Image 1 (cartoon, protein in one colour):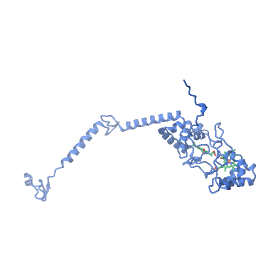
Image 2 (cartoon, rainbow, N blue to C red; image 1 turned 30 degrees about the vertical axis):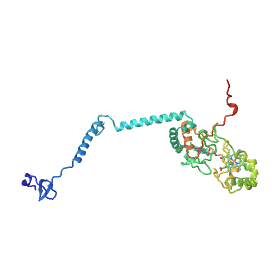
Image 3 (cartoon, rainbow, N blue to C red; image 1 turned 90 degrees about the vertical axis):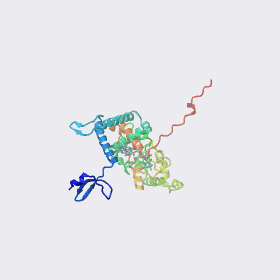
Image 4 (cartoon, rainbow, N blue to C red; image 1 turned 135 degrees about the vertical axis):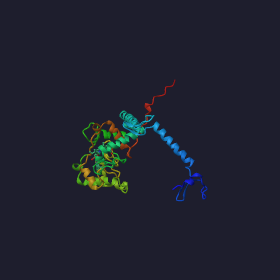
Length: 314
Ligand code: HEC
Ligand code: HEC
C-alpha cells in the first residue's frame, strides 16, 4: 500500500537518480518515467489524422450505406466508375475489330492483344474439341496449329479465310482440294513403291541420287507431283501437304502412307463465320496466327516498269 508520508515530498531513487512517483508497494517504489515526447507527438498526430480522415472520407457503416464524409467518395462508386471506363474501352476496341480487317488488327498492338485474348476464349469453346486445348492437334485427324507447317497458308488473312469458310464443306468459299483415291488407279506394287519413296522424302539420310533411282520416283512424278510438287514441297492452293518434312497429318509409317494413297482421308472443317460471327472469327485468326507459326504477309510485288508513269519534261 502507498504510504501517506512518502507522497508529501518527491524522492529521488538512489540507484537511477530518477524521481519516484511517491508510490510504494511493500517497499517497491515506482519511478516517474514519462512517455517520451516523440511518442506522444506521433500518437496525437495519428488521432488528428484519423479525425481528418473521418471528416473527408467514407468511414463508419450506417443504415443506408456508409457515413460518406465530406468528399462523398465511396469505394463502391469508384468501382462502378472504373468498371464503366473499362466497359467503354472494350466497347471501343470491339467496334474497331468490327470495322477493320485482320491485317489492320494485327498491325495495332493494343487491338491485337485484345483480339488474341478474345480468340483464346473462343478457341476453348469452339475449336479445342478437335484441335486440342493447346492447339497441338491430334495425329491422324486434326492438324496442329502451333507449328509453321500450314496446309492452307499461315498469314493472318489466309488463316482468317480458312476459319471463316472452313475446309471441304458446302460453303461456296470453302477451301477445296481433293486427292484421288489411287487404290483404283495404281497397282499394289506401285502403291508400295511410291509410299516408300514418299516416306524417304523427308529423310535427310536418303541421298538425292539414291532417292531418284527408287522405283517410286517415276510413279510420284507421274501421279503426285502435280499437287504435291516435284520434290514433295506441297501446294497450299489445294491444301496438298508438304511431304518433304517430318510433320505428318496422317502418320509417317509405310502402312499409314499406303492407306492415305488408297483412300485419302479428306479432312473437313465446318465454316465458322455464320455460326459464331465475323468478329469472333477475326479474333480467332489473330489468336491462331499468334500461336507461334504465324507468317508475315509477303512483300508487295515489284511495280512493273510500264506501270510507272513517264516523267513529262516541260
Ligand atoms: C470438327 C473438327 C474441327 C473443329 C471443331 C475445328 N476444326 Fe479446324 N480443322 C479441322 C480439320 C480436319 C482440318 C484439316 C483439314 C484438311 O485436311 O485440310 C482443320 C484445319 C484448320 C486450319 C488450317 C490449318 C492449316 O494447316 O492450314 C485452321 C487454321 C483451323 N482448322 C482452325 C480452326 C479454328 C480456329 C477452329 C474453331 C473455330 C477450328 N479449326 C475448329 C477440324 C476441325
Ligand atoms: C489432285 C491433287 C493431289 C494428287 C494428284 C495427290 N495428292 Fe496427296 N494429297 C492431296 C491433298 C489435298 C491431301 C490432303 C487431303 C486429306 O486430308 O486427305 C493429300 C494428302 C496426302 C498425304 C498425307 C500427308 C500427311 O501429312 O499425312 C500423302 C502421304 C499423300 N497425299 C501422298 C500422295 C501420293 C503418293 C500421291 C500420288 C500417288 C498423291 N498424294 C497425289 C492432294 C493430292
